[in-house]
Length: 206
Ligand code: SF4
Image (cartoon, rainbow, N blue to C red; front, side, top):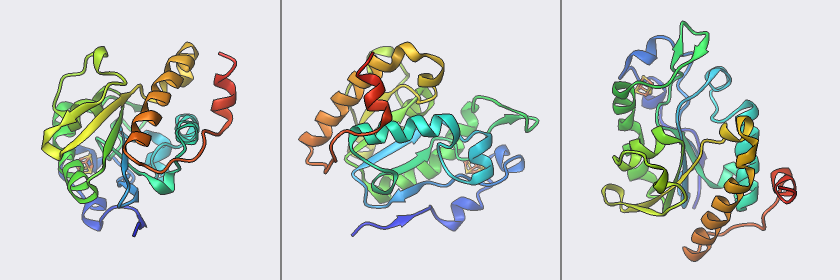
């Protein structure tokens, strides 16, 4: 039976790295704790730090559109970031997470992976891919199933959804990657709805 939940209280109180001193709150992993598909992003930004929820704002809308195209929803996946507190410069600008922060926060990623045991972990961006696979990112890894022996599962790498905001020419490439992911998930007997959403309609014109 699936349960919709948002992480554990110890995760919400984590002080394993310096980001605990500047965050508003931990953006804990959230969703269906028996999900077949785990989506892993990089780190919270300002909107996520404020709301406590993953993928808000413009990137969040792209993420919702991506899920709709695959035939999933936030209620049927597990969603977390490789780094769960916002990395920022003086609380103003977002910055990239540092290697020691990624390593410290991997503790929570391992906890999630061992508890949820997803059939596929969809990584969004370099940091997410490298954190869960321990493999250095290379463009050849994109949209290619890669075994993760540590967790007895498979990684499938997507560009980060924010790329769709800044690089609109990626729309058709992204759509091809999602079609490939959809085929893989169907092969694994993951229940998917028909592709839907405004991103689908927009993609048909590219
Ligand atoms: S980023 Fe991760 S490891 Fe660091 S304080 Fe937040 S939850 Fe803990």
